[in-house]
Amino acid sequence: MIQIDRRHFIASLGGAAAVKLMSSEAKAEALEAYMMAQLNSATAGAGQAQPKKFPKAAEVEAQIETRHYRRGVGNLFLTTEPNGKVKKLWPMPAKPTFLDFFTLRMQQTSNHVLQSANRAMKTGMPEEIILACLLHDTVHALIKVDHGYWGAQLYGPYVPEKVAFAIRYHQALRFYEDKEAGYEYPDLYRNLFGEDYVPSPHIQADYKMLKNHKWYMEPRLVTVNDLYAFEPGVVVKIDPFVDIIGRHFKNPKEGLGNDGSPVAHMWRAMAIPDNPL
Ligand SMILES: [Fe+2]
Ligand SMILES: [Fe+2]
Image (cartoon, rainbow, N blue to C red; front, side, top):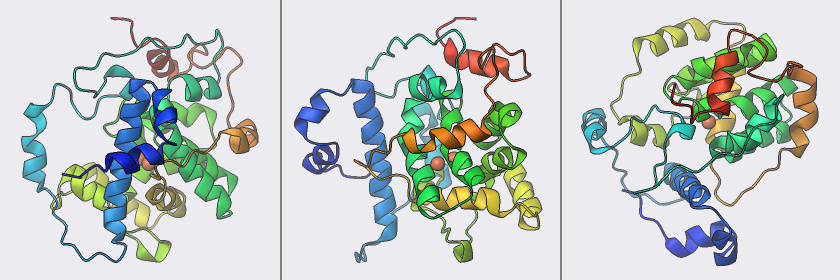
């Protein structure tokens, strides 16, 4: 298990006063991000030659029945706080846009995806890659298992084909190293899936297809930026990306969820996740 240095964690959030202002949900989220970053910096090594201990896939599987939820469930549908209760959500505007969903329903991944989009922007990547980075994990609000495919479907009607392609296949490429492109297999995945985990057949098949695809670099660049987007205490604002969203994201005039598209129900499920049916 990762050891948490409490003082360092609080300092990374801006000190005790800043922590006091955070909701318990935000704190839980920050702790998760912090732990992920700890895992990542353990990966980087930082000159420490400590042997790393990763679980085996069988050990990861043995944890299933220790939880009261399944790991693939969407963030809006559970709280992982011990004895936690979910919070009432902010109401959505009548005709919600992507930015409304991003700020009111996708908070648990927003800092991570903003950090990854920020890196894409700073390193001069094309706008379509920046947008793909900004969207790549946001579907976690709805569902986490197979999130690349769900995410591409959710955004498909509203973004350029290349953006949806990058979102869809970043999930598969996360499992495969490409050192030349700057992507190493992350220790985060060794921890999440087990060090001897073998990706599912659909992931293997997609990787095989992608290797020779003319758009291989689109999802690959998303994975490259993904690696550096778990920095605790680093807060990136949405402002630098608003113009890019405006240029490439076609918000329907009726609002997302109201446009009768094949994915409208997915947006509605995020807008009203407390509805019992
Ligand atoms: Fe992802
Ligand atoms: Fe990610």
